[in-house]
Length: 119
Length: 108
Image 1 (cartoon, rainbow over the protein chains, first blue to last red):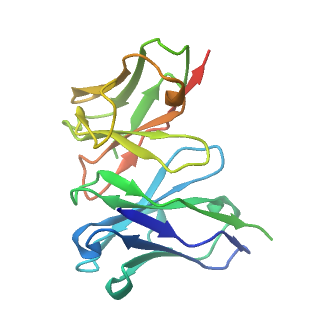
Image 2: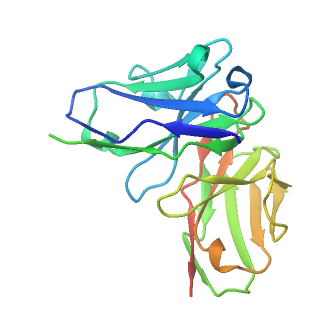
C-alpha cells in the first residue's frame, strides 16, 4: 500500500539545524511532488513548500525562504526537509504529504515528526 | 496572498445531526479548494478536492460545494468518528498553497 514513513522525534537547541526524512513506498516516488506541512502545538496547518522528486525543483513558502532546503534521493525513495537557524517557535509536528496531481492536492500523509526546540 | 477564513471556529453538534462548515476566501480561488479532516495525534486526511470531489474511500455523507469565494463542507448525518478538526486549503495560486485556520467539530 502507499505509505510515507517519517524519521523519529527530535530535540534541538535554538540556532541548530534540523533534518526530517520521509520514505515513500507503494508507488513510483519520482511521479509525485512531495509537500512539507507543519503544525505548532494547538495550532493549524502551515504549508512550508514542495519538491518535485523527478527534477529536484522546489518551491518554498516565503516565510521559510532562506532557512529551508528540501531534497530528495530517488535511489532510496526518500524526501528530506532541512530547517536551519531553529527558534523556539519552530517547535511543531512536521508532516510530509504526497501531491496527488502535481498541483496541490495532498492525498497521502506521513505520520508526522515531532520537533522540540528548547535550550 | 489569498486568506481563507473558516467558520465557525467551533461547532457543537450531536451524532445524527447535519454539520455545515464554511470556508471563505479573500478573493476567488475558482474551484481549487480542498477539505481535510484531522483527529488529535493523527495526520490530516484528504476528504474533498476541487470543491466537490470526494477523495478515494471517503463516505458519501461528506459533500463539498461552492466556487469563487464561498465554500461549504457538509456532513449529512454525523457519526461518532466525524468529531475532529477540519481544514480547508486552496491551490489557486499554485505553486503556492494556503490553509484555513480550521474548525473544531465537537460533540454537544
